[in-house]
Length: 337
Image 1: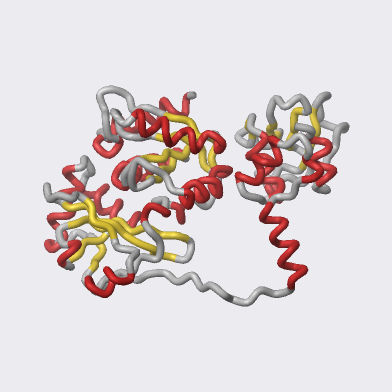
Image 2: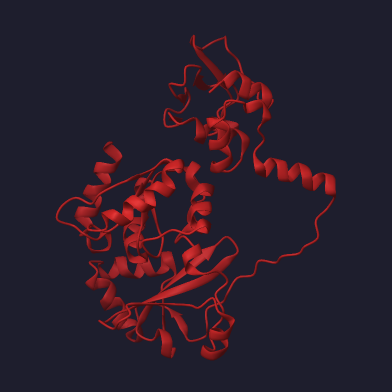
């Protein structure tokens, strides 16, 4: 990538010579330090060997895509297009182009309003009360202590319900920036199907008396609303209880987790991943052991986002069933790579 051409084209200030500079690099203000960098401390290799900040050594990487995204404040998809292009002078991120076109057309009318759902009245947050005992016992059966189970319910707003369709289910809500958009429920017993999900159909909503989901759950990513700062690792799992366990124990170490609510991925989910990809140093697809063929199909669609596959250590087959000690050991292996 021709960094000098890129910086000139986008009117980004840079220096090539001066204090604390090295030959073969160009230097810009560190976009990761923000206002803390009053100089030009982020060095970029002109021979595409990577980039790094002299003030904060954690602000470094090899991929030009992440840096382009942060410099231009554009999507991962646009940044990759620019970084891969041989003719950067002709490129403008689609988001930036949209802003320019909108400015020419004048102020937009509010044609779309994003509302959020409210939990039905018979949905209650799981707490340390007798009525919630079956749900807490279920979480304890998934190797959480009572204290961890209660904190898990608070952190992820896990609910229980007496509604016929969702009775005896731990309700896992799905939030976007505007609020609650849908939810799914996992039965605490051996009932089939294990999961029931709020319908996106208006007809079903009228029949059940439940609200209509604002989005199909297959267009959602669990914890999408929580990814608001730069982190080390994102793990993409199959089911919500896989993601909950990994995210709960991983957050203190900069490891976050989401799920696809299945073994396939929709265009909307790919788009959401492209929006958050730049916040993570590494992203891994982590499906249950024995689903390797599904992982191959998914990774082909995600390769352009530089998402890799990861495998659980033996003998574990499901992230949601791992003992806490095993989860922390797996995290240490990820961070040591």
